[in-house]
Amino acid sequence: MSRETPAILIEGLRKVYGQGDTAVEALEEVHLQVAPGEVVGLIGPSGSGKSTLLKCLGAVIEPSGGRMVLGGQTIYDHGAGGWQIPDLRALRRDRIGFIFQAPYLIPFLDVTDNVALLPMLAGQPNRAARARALELLGALDVAHRARAQPSELSGGEQQRVSIARALANHPPVVLADEPTAPLDSERALGVVRMLHRMAAQYRSGIIVVTHDEKIIPTFRRLYHIRDGRTVEEAGEGRPV
Ligand code: ADP
Ligand code: MG
Image 1: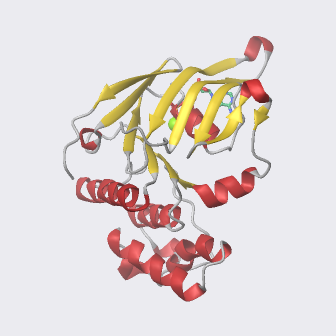
Image 2: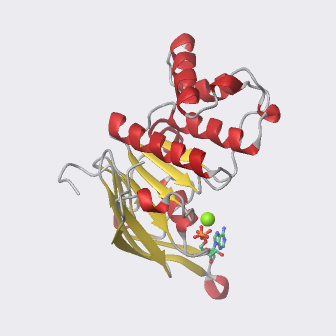
């Protein structure tokens, strides 16, 4: 871990769903740090809080305690009253790339425009956004589907397009929830290679939630979450 400002820093994060008798303490005390340019794995049994952690970090749900800092900026601090930035939508749109387990693409846009949409919304000229989209689609081995509609794609192709879309704005933080589940071994490793390249090139910090035995050995550092608490582990860091 370098000493530069972390891309992602989480301290004492807590999340309780519901109240009273039915309350579920999903995260008890999570500590985690990701350097710029680093891809870390997050592993743990089903129900251990992995998705909850990504949703808190992605400002999709509100934590119940702790602190979250992105690129040196505190975005959440329970002790200081909660969210520390006024526009959570802008945070999600401009600074965080989400990759979900089930790809969701916009059905009436072709593959290229699905990927180019966010950069266009962020003000990039259409031509540049589409060129960037094609480059990402090529790197993910789906450039030949650039003009297809989402409904014409296989599940694996949809997943790779949704990964291209998450990376199109080169966000400083990328959160991936089981991104390689529907992919074969070679393509799963292709996705991981892409994430590493992306992290290195744009100094993004990337968290990959995964059960996938094909990709777990590629991480140099892993966080293991169990009973709502994280433990840092050394990974194999196998080259991809
Ligand atoms: P994982 O992604 O590791 O499988 P989750 O973060 O989805 O785990 O869930 C962690 C715990 O929080 C589980 O006990 C789950 O049942 C509970 N949980 C998740 N989402 C909700 C919710 N919206 N309301 C209540 N409990 C939830
Ligand atoms: Mg989950």
